[in-house]
Structure formats: C-alpha cells, structure tokens
Length: 146
Ligand code: FES
Image (cartoon, rainbow, N blue to C red):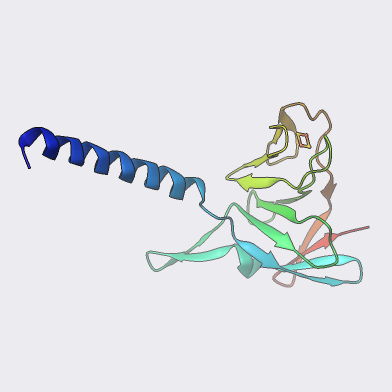
C-alpha cells in the first residue's frame, strides 16, 4: 500500500466514524415509561425521572409515558422539582405521533415542531399541543386524563 492509498483509507474511516457518531447521537432515545391508569389519572413515579451520574442522582428533563389504553404517548417535561408539563404527542396538523428530541417535539410527516410547552415553533401545524393537568403527591405524578 502506498502513501496515497493509506491516506485515502484513513479519510474514509474517519468519515465513517463521523457518520456513525452522528447517527448514534440522533438516535439518543428518550426514556420510555409504562404508566398505570387509575381513576382517570395516569400515574408516573417520580423515580422515572431519576438517574445516577457519577454516583449522584440527577434528573431527566423529560420522559415519554405510555399506556396501552392511550392512542398516543405523553411527553412529560420536568421544569423543576414541583413543575411538570404533560403534552399529548399527537401533531395538531394531521394527527401523526410526534417524536421527542431534547426539548423539541417533531413531526416526521410534514416537519412541524413544538416546544416543551406545546407551542408551535415550526409549521404547518398552527395549534398548540393538548396538555393535561399534573399534580405531584406521594412520590408520583398524577396526570389527569379527563
Ligand atoms: S401531520 Fe404533523 S406536520 Fe402534518
């Protein structure tokens, strides 16, 4: 192998690593939580937001909550110890299930985006996402589905 072939091989390898890293970071999965429905409330343990990092407990900014009775999951955002927001992951344009990336909910159908308060940041959707009242008690979140 001569020098030119060697450099070509290295460049291809570096490009491959970059593409792989980009793909993996784009696939960073949100935590999925299966929650119970009790008396018209979705019950989410607060522990669902906790994770260990360097021997300390830290908290996730959001989790995706599912239940077989719900057609769409909910994105639940943690703004502080006592402030949470629960949003239906249903695009207000034509009803496609949204994907959660960080603080943004994205629609793969036509590109709409919503922030962590459910506000439209990119159309064609125009209406905010449906949200649900959240009450914290007994180490759980009670998300009212009424
Ligand atoms: S259904 Fe979501 S942007 Fe059209």
